[in-house]
Amino acid sequence: MAHDSENDNVRRQIDENLRRVYQEKVEEQLPDRFKQLLDQLKAQEPNGGQK
Amino acid sequence: MTAKDPRDAIVDHLPALRAFAMSLCRNSAQADDLVQDTVVKAWTKFDKFQQGTNLRAWLFTILRNTFYSSRRKAQREVADVDGVFSANLASKPDHDGRLALKDFEVAFAQLPDEQREALVLVGASGFSYEEAAEMCKCAVGTIKSRANRGRAKLAELLQLDDSESMELTDQSTMAVLAANARSAS
Image (cartoon, rainbow over all chains, first blue to last red; front, side):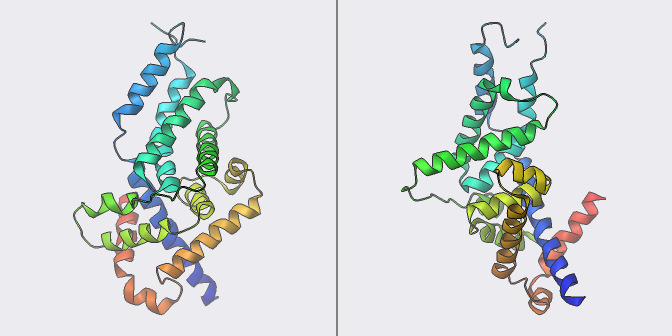
């Protein structure tokens, strides 16, 4: 049906754009604060992060 | 020589967590604070994580719970939407497709939280409807309905809802899609 294929096309375009926008965010460089945070969390462990 | 801490895997999911956080907060400073809170919680409650299950889904769940509980606390504060999505696109070289993508981001930021969340989970980050429903503690049909309402609203805002306007205005979006298809292959 023409109506369905039109909806599919709109949906495909929207999802393509969603993925593209999301991917741009994923590929951004991670701020240093997160590496520092993980280092701090590890340093707090009494036995160096081991269970 | 230290044994590998299973929590070291958290770092692999930080880029995806940030992308999810930005779609919820629409503000990069708030998004990074949210990711930081999420990492601290995940790190300290890691014994609650069931080894062998989906770590990313677990982290996303903590992030969204943190987002909604802090938002409830700050209910009366006006959301500071800084246009994080459009802002960092504007500085990039504009060629065919960029404008349409920016329009898309501006439209996306207007959707209600629940619809943005559903669309990012199932439309962008590749979770199944079942996984998204579990993360959001709601029925699969609810996620589908939120995602579909979000898509319908985007189609309306971007005037994608009839084929005539799509032909006229959407050549740049189609150029993006064509470029995507090429780079994906």
